[in-house]
Length: 379
Image (tube, rainbow, N blue to C red):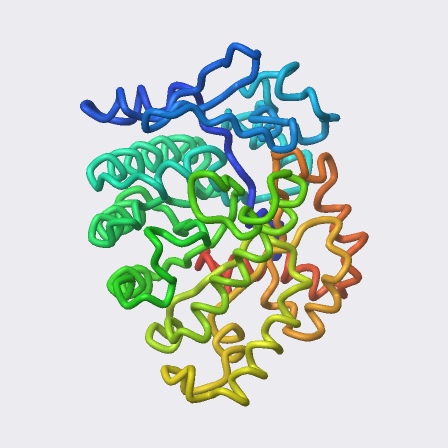
């Protein structure tokens, strides 16, 4: 392995349509999400007694596997989810894509299942879905365990169940990261003390938490959904704004003060907003310190100590962010195989456009992720 292998810190899998049939035990198997075809000819998901038709601006579920292909307003009617790039569904095909792209390690996030697991009000059902997904993903990654790293899901509406599943996912399945939606779970803010046992668990397990938005506004509260129906507008708002909100809550709400060894990554939201946001939070702390009584240092210091943010090919402000915050805070990500991923050539496109020194590029493209994930040989 090269000294600085390229690590894709945020790639995606596309869940197989029979995942829940094979990996969720009865009696919850019959209640699990199902992929169906509507009378209009588009793919949809049935779940908790309702049919959800994610349009993604007319692209629908096929957009989750359409990297490198043209898509448009009729994609959801003319293509099927299961016809997406094989690298989203099959570990062997994914490894072939990684070899072609020059990626040594891929960190794999969900596509369809994060929403149901985050939104299930029934603890046993939510736990069954999380366990089933994590078991499937562990099997997917087992094909090449030193190159494919799964990101586990937990039913965090139920904190004790989330602790149990996070512990199992890390200690039994070998997962190296836990993913959460930045949207509120059960109406709670992220600085709510009810989450403290969960943060303590992750801190002790030594695995980072990754926040990743998904824009399903009719199922969980989503920034921008109260003002816009159009997916163009919703998506433009939800990914960075939801990350800004959870970032504010963790930094200014005292979570990282209380848990100084907890690491956090903010994924798929661009990185250009971060210097402005940290400066703004720091300015408020300077003038209104008594309204953030849980802190012993300015909010941005917690980010510097414990946090990362991902960046992708096409982000024009990478060098600026690296200059302001340090290149050691940035993680390269591909977003493959989703519709908005740069493919093929994400790594070369990133290196060409980022404007980083070779040393900084090596850190962003692999060294930082290796350190965050505590991979062997990382420093």
